[in-house]
Image 1: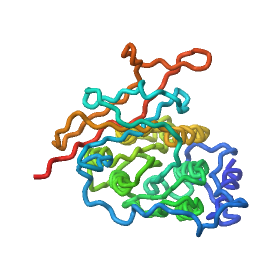
Image 2: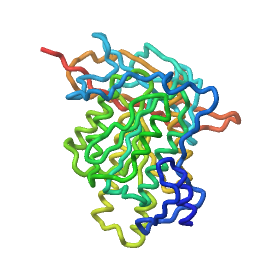
Image 3: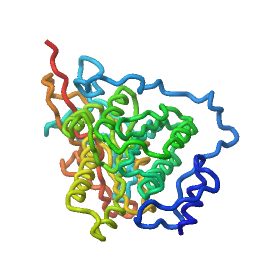
Image 4: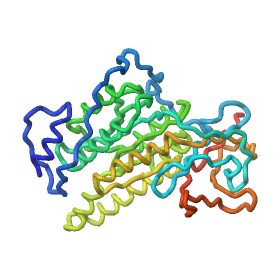
Length: 378
């Protein structure tokens, strides 16, 4: 079993041929079919790297403070933009829902929709990867799981998608800027070998990236691969929530160490304090995802990763794009809650969606939970 796992890992471009190692912990053993995704080889007809277009870097300068209003405010007339995904219980996008069936509430008040469209668009994604000596020591189970999730997600991207890679421990480090050249992302990933610091400052890292991405137009998201633990961030959890809500960048979180934690807990190796810390970590990832209009996943098995990647792709590529002008025109700097509903306009009741056989479909609406109104400048 160990030789099989090592043989698969040896296929990574950055692993020395013939290296011999052992697992550094007594966690659950991996099945022989598990592998870290490999870089995609260039095929005939693909453009050379020099011909790849590139989004102008948004990582050059960090904003000193979060924006006063939502990033969709472009003029004196307030306009709120919503990226909305409607998914069935299998995580599949439900298309062709008419505009009349959507209802947007702001602080419980129905709003007038002024713009509506549905379509598929390329993804602009920043992968934010926890790579700390706290959990990702070389050759450990969490090290392997982290790289499996990261390489696996890269494999699902299409040629027109933009991706950047940021790793964090005591501070975030930009390993590659946004580009459609996936080789740049793979080269960046090859630098994740041995973790340096034993800090995992999640709040600082994810808010830093979200603020830098707030001015990028179009469909964008952060794919956060993390334990959810924050050890020593400069900002608090509450402040991180506020910044992320204002930045307008959905977070799709993949929580690490789920099976390993259960294994340790079953053998009495996870104390009550550590158990509470991990429960809080999961709650932090869920909160970031929910409040930004993303999703959170907590896989216990490697076989769950393909389904997670499909769900993220479905939610990001396919969307309903809704805009409205708020009926509340006060510039008071207060947070306003948004709720998107599907209703039958004739009865004002929740919309019932059925499949080809007439059976009801349970669905989930994914959209950001609100925004902070701009404040009047005196």
